[in-house]
Image 1 (spheres, rainbow, N blue to C red):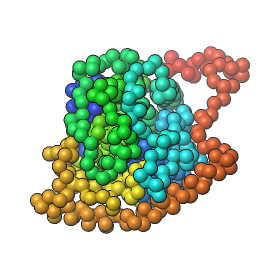
Image 2: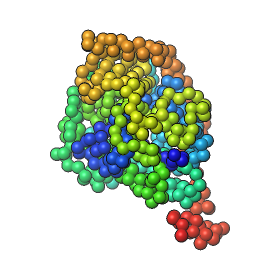
Image 3: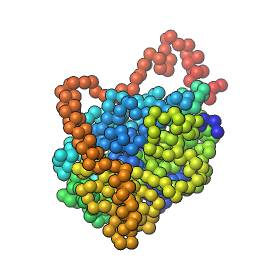
Image 4: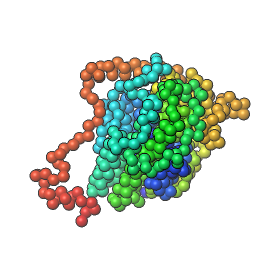
Length: 500
């Protein structure tokens, strides 16, 4: 196979459970469904950390977050870490990012040749958590139930403004690739929806009726210590939700999933209009999911299925039609894209933690595949680890009792099997694997030292010690459209696609 184009479309906070492609009976996602029908749907795909920035840094680098210091939403993503954008560029690709990637630090490109929008969130150290006060709520920027209570409709929000720009900028650059047509390209279009606030425009809200909105299957508050800390952090105990508020938030979330699906449709249509559909691999995924009321939890920040699992759908040349139960995670996408681009592990600057899914996209199944997750951010004072293999998921934190679930038989994780005599051997094996993979005490000390450093740096930055790192897309109006130094007929011919 010659080097295919790659269009990777990423949602923010989209649990696969809430899409038609993964079997939800209410949520309308016709464009994602169509890709799943002609491609491969992965049914056990996970993020490597259930929080925006850490998840994205592991996705970009193919590395677990403890290896690259990507602990939380204010951890710097070092410029010295190679990404799939670096590798694809080395393989001859044009590479572009349109939308969110939550890069923290002065490097706001990380291997992309072009970046056509700014980011939606801060790029500095202001959002650093404090493990010396792990039980205290961070009021300035932390989620709470007021966000859920204010769900509903609006004509415009900062998130709608952003995603409309992401779509426009991605489509325009893709047509530029079509006009040039000299080398393969990789476009990453990364949207903020359906991330909270759960607020939707009327045309998407009106796709649904209140009576059709299903409620959480298990709304009772989580009983595990980590779940309880997250419940405390999001103020679930002190700001309880009514049934109507839960239903309204879920309706708005479903509406915004459909809005995201429309963006998928627009980008796929652009590929069709470019005449490149047969030479383009399209990937749909997300950085993490959303609990959306299961176990009384909202948003993410835990390793339960609705938070930690992500959609992963591939379609295009070399991709078979079907579904695949192989356990996988976002770190696997870097080696997959490198293999598609004609590269191999010999070009890696550092060994990656992921495994290529190219054969799995062709239909191969690996029953022994493993997904690993790490959480080192808010509402914990110790690292939290997850291992998913086969039918089972194991969750460990030094301060909490272990959790073991058969997520195939018990998808809502209602039965913790860690202390079950019938699963004692399996639980012991997982615990031994945790001890082999991680030095939890050393990692905790490293995380806390990083936080202390960033507190000091943030104080200096707020006092004006450095320029803002927020990305400002370059623009030169003197070379756009038609200007006096151009022949307008030449410009018209050059920018018309297809050419006459």
